[in-house]
Length: 232
Image 1 (cartoon, rainbow, N blue to C red):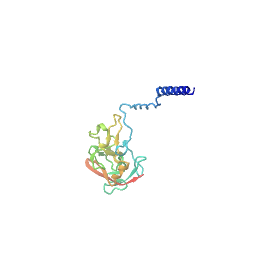
Image 2: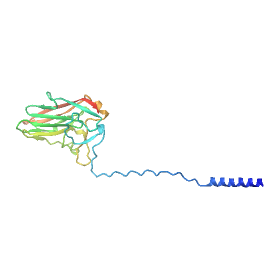
Image 3: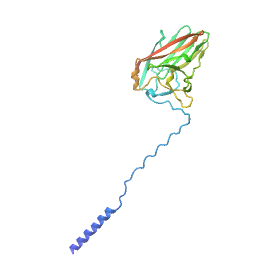
């Protein structure tokens, strides 16, 4: 009786083994693929927001800076500038019997203010002003009303009335950036404020401002120097 029982047990085990091998294998659970990000809707003609780093940083317009070390908030490096032309200038200021100048250089542009010291008008001819960039490039000067789509056109002169004042800022025409039809004045900075800033220590740059005073041309050569680049 023992042998038949053993044979029956072996047969039952074999059937169970075969059944287990033929049972379907459940697939492993997988995570669904992440949903594709929806494209960001943009308004036709909308200009890009000021952004970028180093030479690619874009700003809108410019403004006077009262900081001892002007530059963007959170910049890795700050610049300390000095002024060496016109001769006799001091603390970014210069004057003669006709005009008084105040300058504030920054990584984005050169802010300035002019006071007409005489009681007769003076004309600043922007079409004849020249900008000298820190990379050695010479180009036309751009200022607060210069637009991308007018960069090849003649710029309107500015008349400073007798005893009047005029404030503006300057950068190189080639720094202008296409605003995508927004009408904003977008331009690249002149000086990077990341690790690339170190290569600009000791560089000189500036502009030639062309005036008509008593209907006679007079050019003021204005130059600045990067005295030091300071890590923050």
